[in-house]
Length: 151
Image (tube, rainbow, N blue to C red; front, side, top):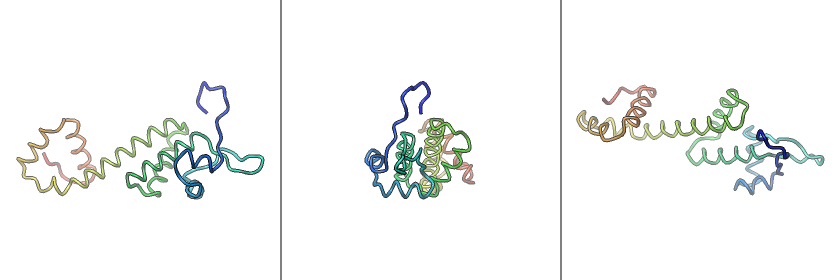
């Protein structure tokens, strides 16, 4: 529940949660079985009930899957971030940042053969044509990936 809110959190049964998230109920069950999702509570009839944070989490999972992350990679990222902070908002922002950085790393790996084929003068012209921040990010990612600098 968000701080400052006096109304109780909205709870959803699997079918409603799935519809709102744009996935099938079977997907919700699957993610729950993998430990990517957890019900907020159980109803008196023993139905699993999920909250808005779970809805946001499903959307993050689907976004990461669209960026070609495996479910195992997604689970690892969530696990790491949950150890950092139990606050869902902070976890969401960290997950978004981690997703973005991982996507940048993948993009740099795809560019690597092209960058490697550049002659020194071409590489210098390329790095002058892009913003200093972009050049610094590419250089840093290449160094982190164990590649030598292009400059």
